[in-house]
Image (cartoon, rainbow, N blue to C red; front, side, top):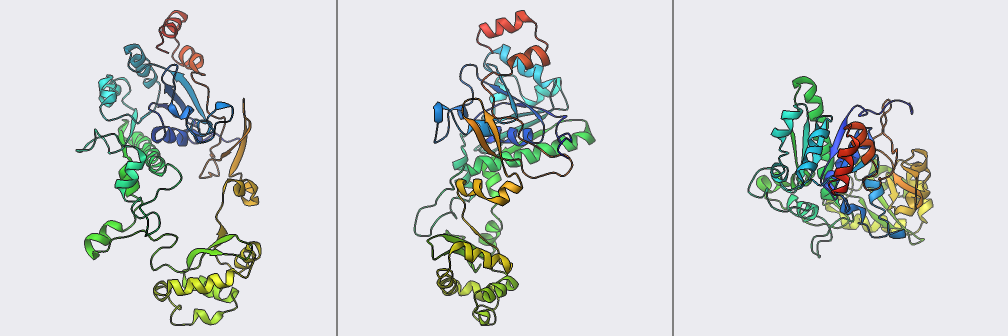
Length: 400
C-alpha cells in the first residue's frame, strides 16, 4: 500500500514556536502526511538549525530530522504585517501548533478566540512547560524542568548518586507526543461539533502521565519509589548480564513461565522449582542472589551464542544498542526502521522512519528539513495569492 494517500494528507498545520516540543509535534503530524508550514523568524530561523553535538560542514544533524516533511516560510511575528500573514494562513488551515509562553499569542492579537473568528474549525495546540493555567503558567519551562517536576528524574539513575537524566530530550518529546495525540482527538471531535478547540499540553503533566502508580503508592501505601539503577525493585530477573567476550546482554525473564525456560537454557531446571525463585515475589526478594547465578552462567558464553540460545527458548533478550548497532541490524533493515535520504550538502542521511506503521495509510519521510524560507514563494505567492508588490515590500522590509 505504498502508494496510498497518507492519513493526514488533507490536514494543513501552521507550526509556530521553536526548539523541540512544538516542532516535534509538527514532525509527528507531518510524518503522516499533514502539510506542515513552519513559520520562522526572518534571517535567524529556529535555533534547532544550529543545535546538535556534531556539525559537519557547520550544519546541524538534528534539524534535518525534526524539520522533516515541513515547508519553511519566514515572518516577523512581532510586526503587525507578520501577524496578518498568520491570520491569512489560519483561514486556510486546520491546526496551529505553538510553544510560546502563555500570553504570547494574545499579545500579538492571535489568541484562539481571535483566530476562531477567522476559522472556527481551527485546532490550537499549545505546548508549554506548565500549561495555560495555574500559578506556574507564566514560568519558563524547559523539558528538563518538566522531567524534574513530573517525577522521572528522581527515579532515574543509581541509588548512590544524584538523579540522572536520559541522553535525549525526553520531557519535550513526551509533551509533543501527547500534544499530537490531543490534536488528533480534537480533529476527530471537530467532525462532530464543527468547531476547533485548544489542546493544552504541559511538559510536566506529560512526564507525570508516565509515572505509573507512583502517586497512589505514596499516598495510600506510604511507599516512595527510589532510584534503583539497572533494575526495578521486586522484578527479577530483569537486568544486564556480562558475557565472556566483554559484551553485555539484557535478559528479561521475570514471568514464571519465562523464568522456567531460562532455567532450562541454563541447564539448571531445578531453579524454577526452588522456593527462593519459584514465584515472581520470591525472585524479587532474592534478586541479588539470582542475578549472581545468572551472571556466572552468562559469563561463560560469548554474546552471540548466549543470544542464540535464549532466543531459541523464547527468553526475551537483547544487546544494548548504539547507533552503529542499529545501522547494522538485519531486523532494523527488514522493517525499514531507518531510512536514507539525500541531503544537498551532507550526502546520504540516515534517519529514523515513521512509527507506528499503518497498513493502509502509512506515513513516510518525504524530505529532510528545509532551508530557511525555502517555501516563501510557494506559500505566499501560491497559497495566499500575494501579488508581486506586497511580496516584494514584505521581503524588502524584513517582514518575511
